[in-house]
Length: 303
Image 1: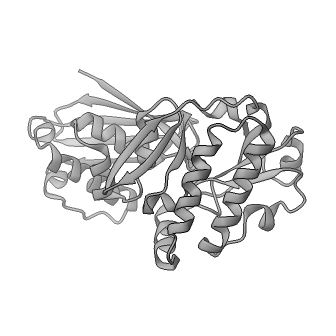
Image 2 (image 1 turned 180 degrees about the vertical axis):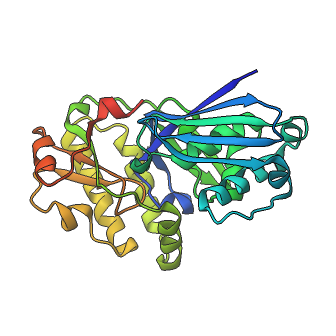
Image 3 (image 1 turned 30 degrees about the horizontal axis):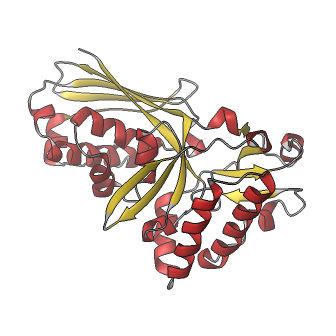
């Protein structure tokens, strides 16, 4: 019998990087996500096909179930290597799925372009965790690493506050429907950021950030009750200013958009993926003139 699983994509509005050190992060599940379609077979293998949003095949391979069970990696393909690692960890968590099968034909289907960085990996991990009936956070931490906020987004259909407390995820669904969403736009920066390498850099360069975590916590909580777009924008501008020296990185406005009439906030891994633009006047022409053509209004992006 065919099975289908689905997980939401993600964007991180506050708490990037510092969420790893216990900060409260405001995370936003997206209307975009990824499907996992599973059909039993008699091949003794997993025939895997990954489709991008335009239905093109971006990855395809056939992997022996015995290689997954025994964690045997002989391929030079990095996607194959990662996939075997994830599936082996899932098998370790629940051996019955693969031991009681003769094989599977599997198709993943993204509803957003792979290069957007909305959670190709996290949605896959959450879908596989659903298939194996195991803890998605543990599967993430044993395979990719990271804070886990993206897994929380995959599992929730409203904005959330995400925090790591005593090495465990604490997820609080929140109501976040500001009256000024028509002033909020997500802009893709034309390059995908490697979140794993960004996290490594953050861990290597950070110092004592206890005061920063306290500031992030206050900012996250205050944002939820912002009544005006000006209040909201100023909070995020301060967030951007505080994080810049910690990451030893100039803000995105300083680097790319110094003449922008509004506030810009980096999301997730600085330097790539999406940014949030807050502007009283529609900024689409401004960004398109600078070569950034993927501009998505808040209401079209966020669940």
